[in-house]
Image 1 (cartoon, rainbow, N blue to C red):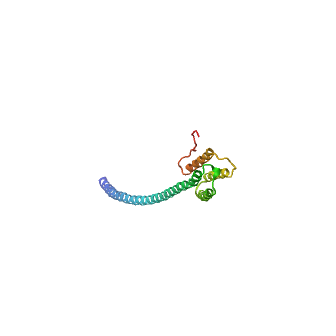
Image 2 (cartoon, rainbow, N blue to C red):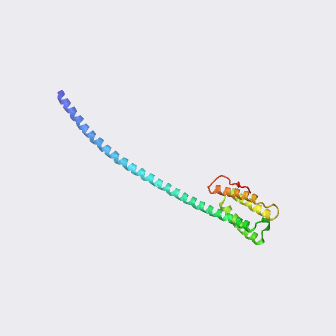
Image 3 (cartoon, rainbow, N blue to C red):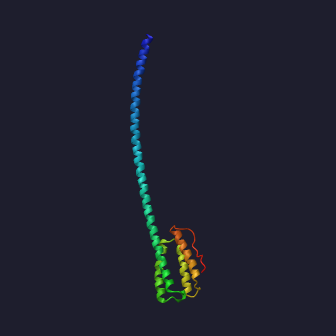
Length: 177
């Protein structure tokens, strides 16, 4: 055979393989791109679904936290009223009338139950220390001092503030009285 024929046959074979290879390469690239887009769409849909579930879960938690926060604030507003009412009615804790004491006792029992359900133990315990102080003074077991009551009340309020997340510092009276 002639070298010229050999080169022509070889170039024809290479040309046919090259054109076929180019076609196979183009088709495989196109098919790969379609598969990649499908996989990406499936992964994107999966991630979007998971993200939506997380958003929904976070929204439920945020709603529950907001509701609990509002309930605690309402509870703490309600808790102070019986104490304030009793102190206003009696300038001297030793002169509590029977009617005032009975009304205070009803409110105290209600408040104690509410605090037991919603407040942390530290708040509940401090409330009971205030109540014990009031009763001890009323029964003559302790001497009434507004300054002593104020210190207990400020400690109680500091614990409430910490519970509802407003502040973690302690309140104190810094005046001259």
